[in-house]
Image (tube, rainbow, N blue to C red):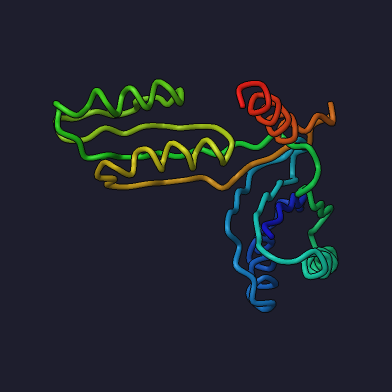
Length: 178
């Protein structure tokens, strides 16, 4: 199972290196990683996705908490969160086929950030599901380059789990339209 960890650290050199070293020694691969300043000066927030069972992740969190410069580690996998990711996608496209890509980009509210006679670069922001969906649709074209940020998250104060709401609405629709 994929877990999402939110880690607050002191903004000191070598912190990320110690964290990645811990993961490497334990044989874990970090699937997604995003680091940036947090709400207080001198503190950074690291958001990472890692695969593992619950017991293994609990052990990993205990090990992370033992590292110096780690202020807080939270497994937010089952907590309602706001998730966002950014992807830049460069597609090789002839002018005649450009309209189909622009149609897909409009549906997903992607921004065209660069255009030339032979390529189009899109900026897509959204939850990981949206990023995956638009990439799958655009795979039918020649993708020249992709750059993605890691997932960033914040816990929802409203405690509303939008994923469970989506599943509930889909279930209701399937029963109505059956």
